[in-house]
Every structure is written in structure tokens, then in C-alpha cells.
Length: 107
Image 1 (cartoon, rainbow, N blue to C red):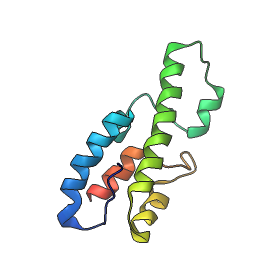
Image 2 (image 1 turned 45 degrees about the horizontal axis):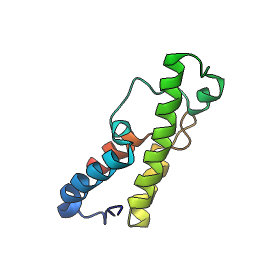
Image 3 (image 1 turned 45 degrees about the vertical axis):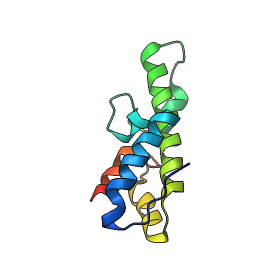
């Protein structure tokens, strides 16, 4: 079951431990840290060549980042926490970067 974060400082550590375990089971734990496999822009994935091994890694990283952001968004239990999703979104990454979202929550 997806662990939900209530936004309280005192519950963050236990939520983070549970969320990391959940992310490993769901296969997006690597995207919770900065990765060189991500292209500069989310839209760059459309021009990548699936027959190229490096591009294939980039495509997989973009998909896993999207999966991570979807789960993180679902795990946020308040409107104020959901505002953090908008804060990590940009022109290059309109869906946001999961590692930046995690950094924001850690702050």
C-alpha cells in the first residue's frame, strides 16, 4: 500500500523509509536520486532512437521518473504538499523531476 505523507516533520522519517521500500518494489527507486540517464528536457524523449542503448536508458529513465512523480503526488496528503509538485515543474520538465521533489520534501 502506498504510504501517505501528512506533512508533519515528526512523521517524515518513517514515511520516507516506507516510501523508499515501496519505490523499490514498484521499480522507480533510482529516480528518487539525480541520474545522468535523464535527458535535458522531458520532450527530448520523443526524438530518441530506441535501437541505441544510451537512448534506451534515457527513455526508461523518463518513464520511471513519470512513474515516480505519479506515486509521489498520490502520496502527498495535503494541498500545501501538492503545491510542491508545481514548484518542481518547469518548462523542460512540466511533469517535474522526482529527485527534485524528494529534495523539496526533505527541506
